[in-house]
Length: 281
Ligand SMILES: Nc1ncnc2c1ncn2[C@@H]1O[C@H](COP(=O)(O)OP(=O)(O)O)[C@@H](O)[C@H]1O
Ligand SMILES: [Mg+2]
Image (cartoon, rainbow, N blue to C red; front, side):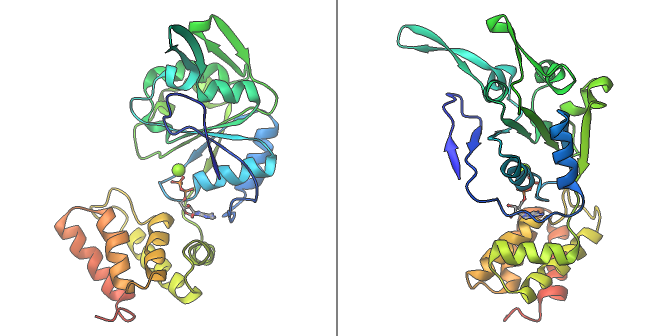
């Protein structure tokens, strides 16, 4: 459940209410590591490809720790003001409006900078003193430095394959952060996730996982990204809607993964090999 943030400049910021635990199946020791790091006030960076469960994981952790979660979907125009806040004109008055990072610091929430890869370089200036032992947020425009309220946690995710502001963080800051690596879940785990999320039977989920793994074995093979759990779930959803398996795989996996004709042909061959039998064509 998402509560609209009061932040005027939306930039994808949302505070989560935590009614029931978001469905998350651990893949390794990530839950224990996250909770230990959070309790010690260490910032956390989640590394891994897109669609492998990072966002869902943070939602589950915020729920378990009983903290509000403020998520900021980073993009390449994201400025320090977007994170920290800005003066806005309300009628003929100028009012200061906190950004999502400032709200998290004041309220002791977990602030999740999703895909921090996209944020602009200058945002690191405010992230440094927050991410390291100081746990302080300097707000230049207000001339104040806020101490993070108890409960505040800074979590960032990024895909190591791409350029990232994290690469420009000072080593002293990076070394104050805990890194949790995300990969794709083991087959049995991924099958259970797909069956749960897409509402398909275990056999269909297993088929999709075998297909996904075949694509992952291609390694690069002209693909920028391999098949994530997310695209396999999307295929599963279409199958649950009654689409033939091969069609679902084509439009939810092959199509999104590549625009290249030859690579697309390769993926279609895999669809035939791995999903052809059950495709009534
Ligand atoms: N370990 C997991 N447990 C439960 N669901 C998962 C898991 N891994 C992936 N998913 C599913 O895959 C989808 C994509 O995961 P997401 O957290 O959005 O990926 P990321 O943030 O890494 O791009 C989620 O919506 C969820 O349905
Ligand atoms: Mg994400």
